[in-house]
Amino acid sequence: MAINLPLLKELCEIPGAPGHEERVRKIVIRELEPLCDSIEVDGIGNVVAMKKGSEEGRFMMSGHMDEISFMVSHIGDTGFLHFVPLGGFDPKTLTAQRVIVHGREDLLGVMGSKPIHIMTDEDRKKTLRLEDFTIDLGLPVEKVKELVRVGDVVTREREIVLMGDLINGKSFDDRVGVFVMIEGLRASKSNRMDIYAVGSAQEEIGIRGAMVAARNIDPDLGIALDVTLANDVPFVEQHLFVSKLGGGTAIKAYDGSVVPNWKLRDRMRELCEERGIPHQMEVLPRGGTDTAAIQRGGKGAAAGCISVPTRYVHSVIETVHPDDVDASIQLMAALIETCGKDDFRL
Ligand SMILES: [Zn+2]
Image 1: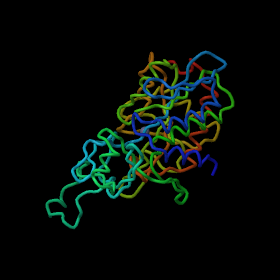
Image 2: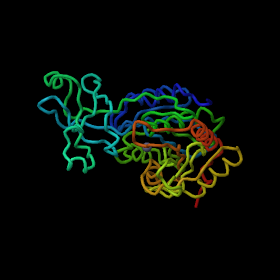
Image 3: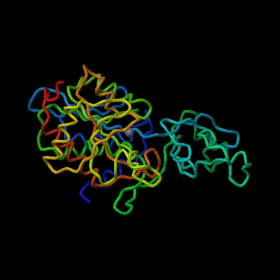
Image 4: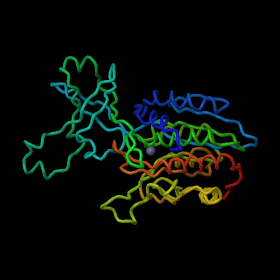
């Protein structure tokens, strides 16, 4: 496998709820510091690393550090925790999951709901809602109250494993984007523009970190790095696939939040053709990414997005193909090496 799997695994397994990205931030700083001329953490918690270029112009890259998570909203009389979501969950993905409650210490817990054995016919017809789940910590209520407070965040517990030709686990959304940003910068041989590598905060609850970073950096050019849907599975018709695992890096042509700069989009396609990088085009009917924040943050940057095709997005069995990750790194490096400030003026 060509990619740095230990780093990808480390990035994906570390917890980082929106607004609580500190553990991810540490790794991002550790990796970016040797590659850049300056590095800082801004007020919302974005890591902003800058590498001087040989020409004028600011090129922002952004991969979000946070993951979809929960927050404790109530501690019940028997010690079970109620919660609100931080990010978009499909309730059925919570069934029978392990989680980590970040209280005064990290506590392992499980998501439980009403047992099937006592469900009425009426119950069985209903689809589960997030509020039908509680978290069981396996501790007496007094102990729970000592260790957990309302407002504590909760993340999902899952190891990253190899599965056939693929990699499987949690939080590829968007640690694989953070990974592509770091490895793309590492792989690049030169840069014309000043490169701003941003590990952004709080994307999953409304691209908040990237908005702040883009406002401060005021980029001329920007690339978001995120996952996109790979719906290439049974029960889905081909025209709804969006992308395919193993089909190469995905060049965004559209998502629910942005129409990327078309000259930048075409440059990405040309670079892939020139350098023999496997690629596919992405039209994602819904959803949003840091791309929108980059485009609107400054004076209207030329914005685009490199997406890593991912199956089962927003679950603990997210799945990517290492070759697609590698292709995304190569495309990121190619952009860093070749883009100039005025290349994409409309
Ligand atoms: Zn994401």
